[in-house]
Length: 347
Image 1 (cartoon, rainbow, N blue to C red):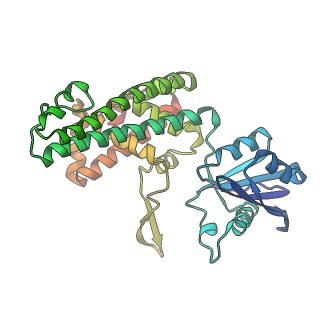
Image 2 (image 1 turned 90 degrees about the vertical axis):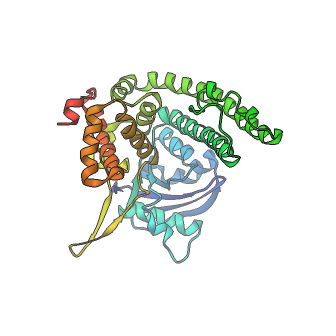
Image 3 (image 1 turned 180 degrees about the vertical axis):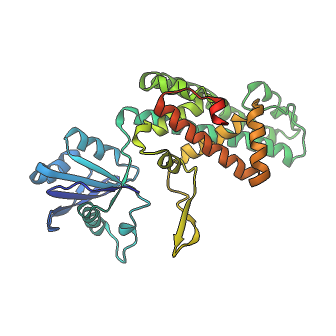
């Protein structure tokens, strides 16, 4: 956990919502200089903080609509800090809670050097990252359609014409005609129609994202593609979710952000459990978990390594260990600008 410790003359805490915000401005002595509700309008916000802009820092919790406020502060050269939502327990854990109280607490945390920081993703690559996340959402929806088709065949105990993967169009032929009941066939046909549309959307999105990646950081993309099993989508996910590896001070911090390690809780010298499973980047956790499985495909040294880990830890934990090792490798690959080396990986 990192805290914002910068010193300023004024501290502005913002409780942000989709249509309104509540801001609180404190001076260096903790006195409230401004406390009011405003609509989410750029001009109104700048007008409200105008008397304090000479030395002001703005802090807001990380919710879905923080983009415009961060970009506005950057354009106006106002210091902005994004608060980590899961760490801001002083805001969420109070006996009384409303927008006015929350904004004051945020300003107080800023002034006291206890405001937990989240990463403010730069706008240059942010839209492409969000588009890539949307592409993953659509791909999962298409997968749900394929799962429903398979379940329908099992439900009626009917053998499908093909046992191949439904993401290939050649294996979708004749699925609706396999049922005698035309209504069941209509259900399958509806799923297939939606799946065909998803194919077109996904193909277009992937082309757009690939073109953007070649502009943003083509060298990093090529390095990531040197990892066995990491293809186009995984490489793009790693590239845009990591952004630049230089924002991590150490490989341990990077692994923690990727949810590849467990955090241990100790008290009085005794282990009391673990926590923080939801703190970190879920997309990177998914990407490295997928990469660990695909890394083994057609890779005898990798399969032998996994078997050694399985004998000691079991299959599930062995795959987690492999994913963590891939995460460490990615960190040093991007930091040192070196391609993946299988010999060094197993050294």
